Image (cartoon, rainbow, N blue to C red; front, side, top):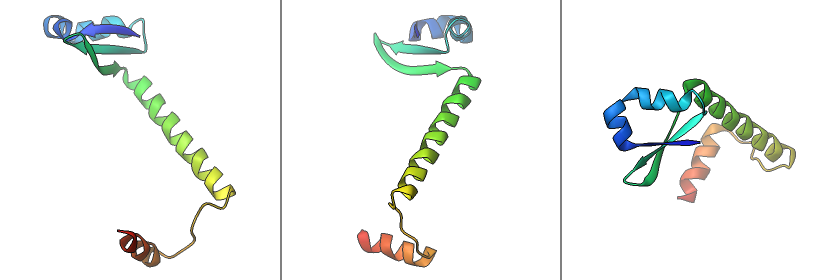
Length: 85
């Protein structure tokens, strides 16, 4: 992953991001010498979101297979949540 300084963004604009993303999937933006942000192309972002959703689905399937779930109506579920507050 390559770095872009805030000053590079100020002076070069989007061209600074594009030049890094031509060779890397992400770029770290540093502000006053500290890494603060990550910039990536939209395709990379969608890929990461899909990975997160696949992971959540796999985790839910493991919970169901292990019996870690509650089968109840929406009303009972809301009442249980409110009682836990």
